[in-house]
Length: 382
Figure 1 (cartoon, one colour):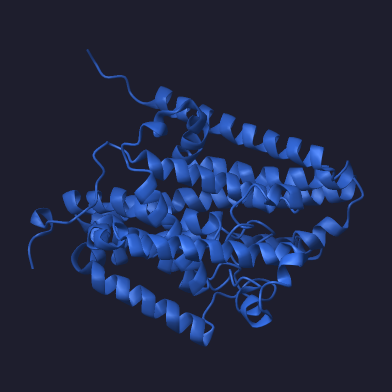
Figure 2: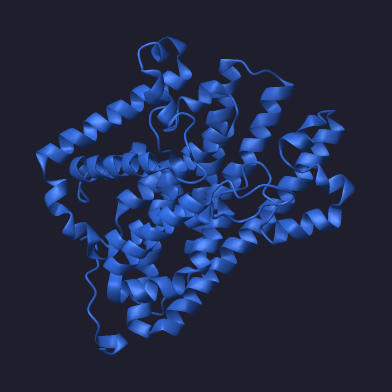
């Protein structure tokens, strides 16, 4: 086997220092997750989930796998496995600390508002009722990632995937196709035999790490040259036509779940095959839907597209660049928005106002963190 330092890797590095499209769509995923966590119909129509099988969570996990492979794969190649693994584990620690802080603030906020504003059902609705009867056990299970309050179920599987990634990445740098095949086999076996992590006090994780790893590894495989192997598919007009047709089909089925009149048009057997949408175990039709979206983006939005410099996209790009902070703030704000709409009014005007206010705060946090990180960088000596 060749030494690590001289090993060549076919990494699909974009011509610019940073592929802005990744930041743009990761920011879009964060916005969609925030709006989707607010349980009111008006805001849901501003997200992906009402227009197809996949949604912001699928996009978030896929891009996370792609960027993690690009960043840490280069470190592992240049400085060796141990340094690359150390950098990965440092990121895992950052994710875990962010989750713990969010978990504590979230749990205490639900408890405080539920009791001080006489909304006791929030305790059960957000899965924090155990905080009253078994506070130590509840907090302990939260620290172990086994207790996932409502809307806090995205970071734990992400932490697990990143924590298991060092040996996977090491193998991908050498045998990316075999790793991709192994990931697909784990996905199929997990769905067949019901593999998942146990949740507290009962049930399983809402995002099954054994199945969602497929999107994470797929992103890594494409980053390490898998995309170049699929150029013939990306450039095929037949594949483009099929992708658009599938997206339209997904649109029709998903809208039929929301609009009763459309259900009369869709055959019952076809409707029941896709609804309810199996998000926990990442149904195959979600993966195909996301793949079709990615193909369209790659064809219609090249890496050097001038529109990526338009001012209208800057807030989304900035939110994508500061993804972790924006995500955590968005999850917390979705709970605040829920309380406001429940205690004040759930009218469409207030829903829109609350949604826009949350996006504004998330964007403000992104710009602040970007400025703060710039200030903290050491000034080069002249």
